[in-house]
Amino acid sequence: MAALLELTGAMLLVVGAFFLLLGGLGLVRMPDLFNRIQAGTKTTTLGTVLSLLGVALMEPQWGWKLLLIALFILFTNPISAQVLARSAHRTGEAKSCKTVVDRLEEDQQA
Amino acid sequence: MVELLLSLAALLIGVALLFALYRFVRGPSPADRVVAFDVMTIIAVTAIALIALLEGRGIYLDVALVYALLSFLGVIVIARYLERGL
Amino acid sequence: MTKARQAGPLFGALLLVWILLHGSLQWQVVVVGVVVAAMIALLFSGAATPLHGFRRTQAGLRAAFGYLGYFFVELVRANLKLAVIILSPSLPIRPGIVKVRTRLTNPVARLLLANSITLTPGTLSVALEGEWLYVHWVTVVSDEVEEATAEIVAGFERYLEVMYG
Image 1 (cartoon, rainbow over the protein chains, first blue to last red):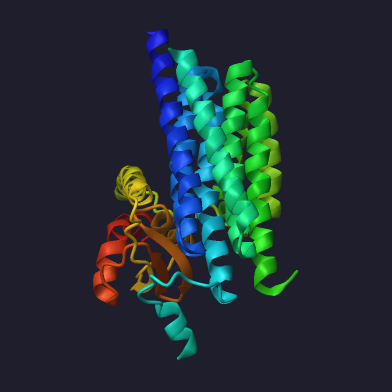
Image 2 (image 1 turned 135 degrees about the horizontal axis):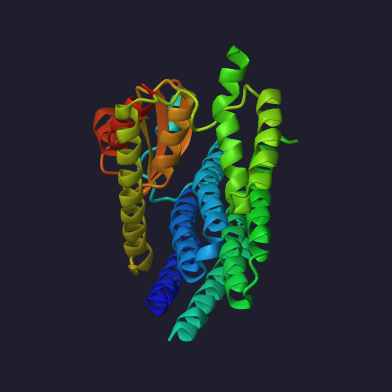
């Protein structure tokens, strides 16, 4: 039973680390800041939560502290992404040429 | 088997850090660097948890928690600074 | 009395964080936690916590669990979708900032909505002004307000409306 938990935990860690890797790759590949924020925020949030769950399965006595870290990241990661996106938009951050529409800019000019 | 999986996870985390570091160095805008910094710290939190696991030291998790806290505050402060100065 | 009632949710949240941090329910830990949490909660009784304005009824609780389940399913979907985009060589994105409407007025509910949108498939909240929410979308499906609202906001709003009524 303990061995099975340990194996599941290690697998979750690998899956989480894979999502973190995707986040890094997204940062490199995406064409502009807003898409990079999207790639960076979502993948790292899930990746970290999965990895911490994996660690919790392998060391159950750390469960509460890991839960606290996971909750904190679930709350603050999107907030920092939004604050950064808003300030970048206000300062006129360049957008990718693929961008099809920007209602915020239209409304601000109106 | 478990050892192998943990090594694989450590490798993936290391490569992810390198990707984020590339964006941090390349930029081009300050905001891009802040995003890269944010991603790097979140990856580092996972890395610290993994190190705690490998070393068997629960106390390292406190480091991860404080690091997550500081990263959040840092990004908020830098975003405000970019928007209208301190 | 009203001040104590206002401080209640903050007290609960602080005590929870304290106990999670210690990971034990020994009486010394709990007593110190209660004292410190009560002092901070009374000093900063104006601070918001996720419990402010939460409707403490059975319907509210059921909606909270529904919200959590829906949120995690959406989080996983968001990541799989993004993984497909990042890993495909042609990088199939069609980014844009669209405008959506929200009916929520409770500040905590609006924060949770913006956060949830940021963590769900392809969307990132950029600005929140009054009832208008500007959302960056990696793959713009529609830039009509009503259609985009149905696509992005409706799923979460359904639960948050019941939770924070």
